[in-house]
Image 1 (cartoon, rainbow, N blue to C red):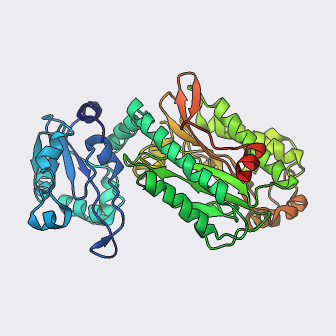
Image 2 (tube, rainbow, N blue to C red):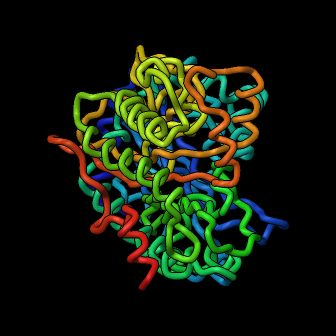
Image 3 (cartoon, rainbow, N blue to C red):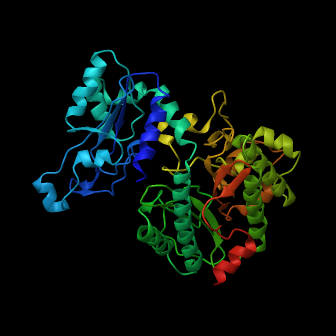
Length: 463
């Protein structure tokens, strides 16, 4: 938790960005895994954390824009709670720590919101992603839970996005810490990735590093020798010499700020010549994107420039042909990289995506492409200092997709389908760093960069 003054300043700035009414913030509750008392690890809602800082279940907060009032709804513990949890600070004490002077029992929330709505006041809330909170809003507003998100406040969403997109110095320091833990997580994998081990053994060691030094992984770990499947969460294969292993994993520290790195490693520690060729194209694109990212340019432009570089590299090895600029305009690169170059990151590994990808990643007036790959770009905005984004180009050889395009005769003037047949067992390569946009360009987050060139990776894996 940051200083009381930090949360007061954040709420003051937010209040100045909304025209009137009340702002309702629902925190998260414990969620049962398989019976009520056995819950998943608790994770507070990030918007609630950002403005109110309290990392406990069963809380809500309201800001009254018209009167300037702020209040937190939550219950003090009783003796049964103390027996199991030990003594706890009162809600009044906890609210005071984040600069809020009024507290009420949680049960008072529904009457407060219902009364405001009945008086014709605007009730601002953001889209809900948990069923229990959808049900609660439905009850308070007298609508079906399935319709709750239809009434989410665009004004409220845009105000939050505008504020949270630009990271404060205290946030950047936390993200640097998360990236250092992510470094340790990935470097552990580099030391362990030996033939004969199960993928799950490496995943377990990586996640142990995070739990020991942080809070939890920032998303479900991806570690797979089938890198052509972008989000492969199955870890049951034996590590096989000569295979490439894509490892996309991140750390979430106690403050809940995140890291998100990807490295692609050769099982056994040495790349084949064929692997080196494709790997170098991707690593060059990763570095090129970081060199290009700076205030004033859109990340869509960076995505396209990195895609062009990779198309040229694929042409150099005989997999792409024809005019590269024409191929880029048509979207040929989507066959090889069917995802975007990056996304925003902060308290959420895909920061604020619960508010809507287009609100977060696109400036007003920017239209989302329908091309495969470019259409999946989560961050296209014009860059400004304080943006924290990922830089994650990739090249994948997805046999089913290649066969579909080949059968359709799609882009036959630009794709060497015959040569691609020799890559059906290749897998995929993705290389990802986290970057902060600075006044003069960008910097990679964390105190050290994970090994990324062929020589660096092979040297690290030989230790």
